[in-house]
Image 1: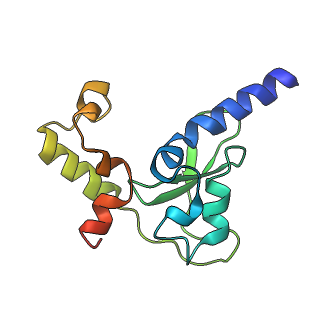
Image 2: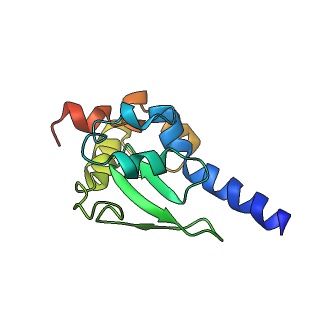
Length: 127
């Protein structure tokens, strides 16, 4: 059982790496905090299955036994409709910036400015 719990926590930590880097695990640093305080608090908790991908403006629930996640459209606590994902815009921008659509490589991702890993880029573009 302890081995499963360790794997579970490691999996959750992996999913929450993006919010750690972008928000420092402080939900108040997100521009969405006023509208979604409970959801962001859960997303900033490394032991919670709630995932927030700041660069894509996406919330998801981690599958606890694996590496997949289910994108959610409503806040489970308030019932509010969540802001639309900007993932298509992010991938289009990344393709234009890097001249490639293979964003998965470390080399390609290392060429992106830090703003593209946080909320900054979509805030600046009023998306």
